[in-house]
Image (tube, rainbow, N blue to C red; front, side, top):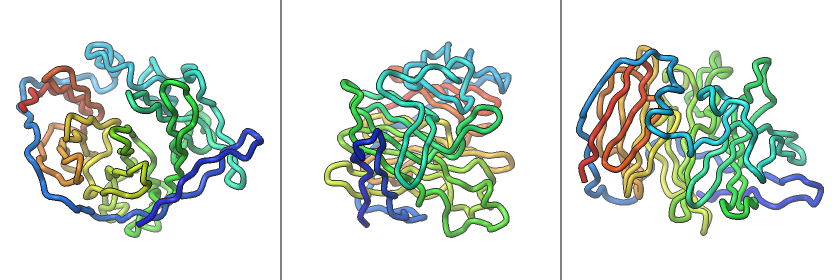
Length: 285
């Protein structure tokens, strides 16, 4: 399956995007599973559901998210975007897209853009992903994930709620890892929701796509050759998933008390913020 590159500028301050092709809505694998780290539960404590700021402060997770107007927490909502990243992305034909989130990593700074803000000032349905050089902040790649937004299993009555928006992304070893999910019940899309996808940037191409229902957490982590992520929703089963980073295959699944929302690793410790519970795991290599 080929992918179309969204690059180039028109010379008038616009970027010229072309949509990525429709992805598979099932697990795609081409290599065998290898040994990866294990997780051992060290502690569990209830939280107050809305005390995001205290949790982020306590585990020092702030550097990864420098801008977020989607309500992740009070400290990043509505803050000034980093230098070199525009609030509005102009595209010929497709119109304007508005900055939703900025994620800084060692190999890339990644910006998400979506539809105009609602009455609460929150940008809707982020689908444009812009990769910036973290040193110069120049644009390296621009992708449109519109063909990832709706799957074949969407219930026609629920399409207003089943837009699988960009959730998180990182670049490592010239590969873009990205998660897409919608904020509705799995049944609204026939279970075809909440994927992680790996895309080679050079040469450009799809490497793998995970099975569905593995990643609607606010972020995922890359730990060596593993991706740690989470899936959960009201009245659905809640799990932490470990994927093989080179193949996308699920190598472990751990049940948790409520939906995993954010994950952060420091040294050999994994911190997981769930809807109503804070978890701490030891990482065993």
